[in-house]
Image 1 (spheres, helix red, strand yellow):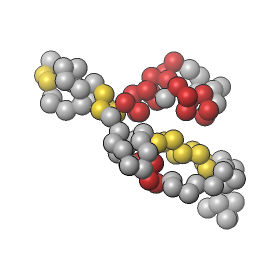
Image 2: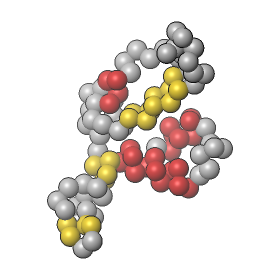
Image 3: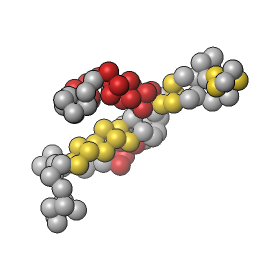
Image 4: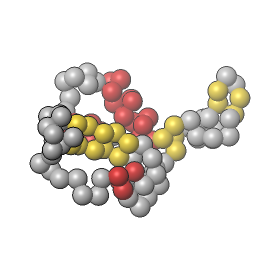
Length: 93
């Protein structure tokens, strides 16, 4: 896609353990930006875990989200995402 000039800029948000392994050699001159929940060798972290994992009054026994995803969604809810930069999101998330 880069060689065929199919985009000017491309952004990836990846929430997964070891998600940084998806972009080990990303070049800075490609217009591709990737923000991941973890580096290539670490787990991402659960959020809204016990005792906060209640749905309709029932504890479900599992985390309801990932810290990266929750922080990204909360940041997006609190800012006009058409007016903030990726650098701002990177710092905030």
